[in-house]
Image (cartoon, rainbow, N blue to C red; front, top):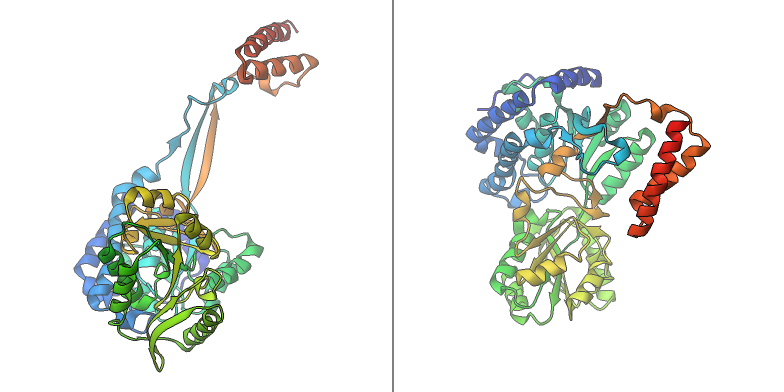
Length: 484
């Protein structure tokens, strides 16, 4: 059983700052030891923690307990173990190479140091209320920060469950505070003066939070919406491709930012399309909120108006599946973020056409490519997205070594992996001058004009004759400066 701590009112930001300063001074190995204890406790109470994820969340009605264990608890503890193993070297001071320093700074040494940001605000999503914010919490604490966790509506139970575990393992309660799930709670925290904000949510939520952050100049990491694409190349395995697409549309009720929304069939894929349509008929209906149903109606109307054909089975308030055939990249459905099992199928003659069509969508979170690896890698190099998966979909992004983040309307900054941990730090550069010479502090004279010009010619001229001429000038100018 997780250790239950007495519920209390959220401590002030000032208390969090005091606790954070003490925590930051603690040895990193001590901080990681606490995370190790927490990982062991989560593993021992995994089923109870999984039940803290409410069935009322988007997609959760279609999860089994095993789904939650696999998608939320397992990747969370793996991310914790990654920090235990890797955080020490990731956060260690780095000496700047002396081999490339300029000659005139030969007695200067430099190193970069990673320091905690301070107090970070983590604004959590509704679809994965434990794993996505939980990894950020662990990274923030490992880096020496304090955390304010604003859960999505209905996500407080998952947040409190992880907090109980961490406090039971010795964490100061002021270092991890769970706010209420209202929008106002996040706004108040921003106005109070948090040092960095991490948001996982929709593009519209990202715009609203950035607008609120702008007057404070508070930095942020934005992990936002997706309208993700799957590319099927000639030679792709139909069975694997279809299985992955069905999984992506089905998993978590299709309430996943990386779920497939655009399918680019490069060349002829008659068998793949037939298998996909056959298997889609077996998907269970997914209850949809009124707002999502209204959005779907608008998208379908737009698709029909632009020549699309919609295959779907629908009942009152539920959607079994929706496939838009003869889709074009200009359709709203191919440019919108929506949590519903909707797939636009775009037939393209070649990869050039696929890349051009893909570019019309404002979202650039992930892309998946199915086909021979060499051709898939070539295509991957041309896609301006945050992550490309080759012959896989969604699953591999849970790898704790892998950083995750989008581009364009899908946000900026990174979470998870090495880069996600570094986002929880501020970079400080320390430069040490070991020369006792004071010449660089003296005023320049007309003789210095020839000295600096000759040095530039000696070191940076393109032809060796010019460099030789510059060296001769440099030594004459140096002799003159010594005489003066």
